[in-house]
Length: 288
Image (cartoon, rainbow, N blue to C red; front, side):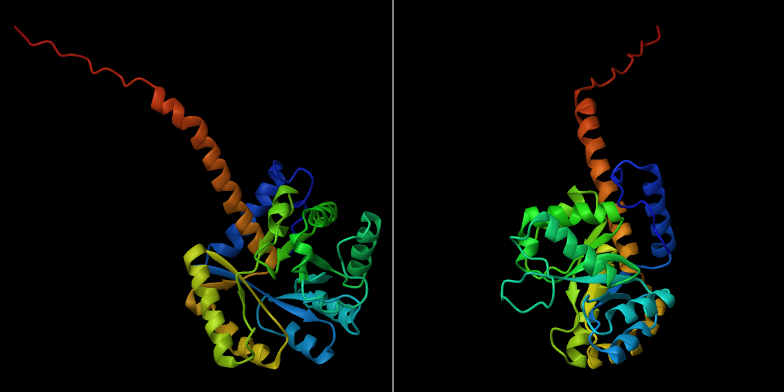
């Protein structure tokens, strides 16, 4: 399902965008006590693991690395299967872990920054959004994050912050640039063990029940894929709905905008009510 216009220059005030966001909420949130999105990162190096991720039950979102042997083919196959595809964009990290060809790094010119982003997107056809691969260094940089969000806004793409550092400014700048955005709540498989993955998945669901929505990120490890193959079909019976990442971001945007508007209205109206004199009760005359 395409959500056109969500990231246009007029996103904050566009009635069409508001209607589309509202429809997304009604369609994907009304039937569940909790809504989650799941992203499988790091796809592209293995065809077999990638195809297994594509075949997971439900609308799992697939984040594909550019410049990988199977990335373009897997993105096309996922698109044909009506799966939501993201570009898993390599960004500079604090540990200086190698990132492959053309990562986004500090000290790039804006022209080179834009060129690398465009080349990466070409290698992941059908990408609806972007999330960061690594990025603990770059997501702290306001200038580069502003450049990125301005490009995403023009292209109508959303952004998911993988939150590889607590100092990230990516989501805040996405909101400032009127880009649809969300961020990770849980990594499922930092520990590659079925019991540990189950603990993290339960944490994800618990957050969603508390807040209404939650976003988890996993990887195409055999342990993760096997767990999700068994676990995802049971979600609906538990009152939990799995949605694509774009829809989760849309639902969170509706809530955020509604709260901001309510706060603004309250700020305007509250002083008026406080200053308004209380009406005097008419005094009743006693009958003679």
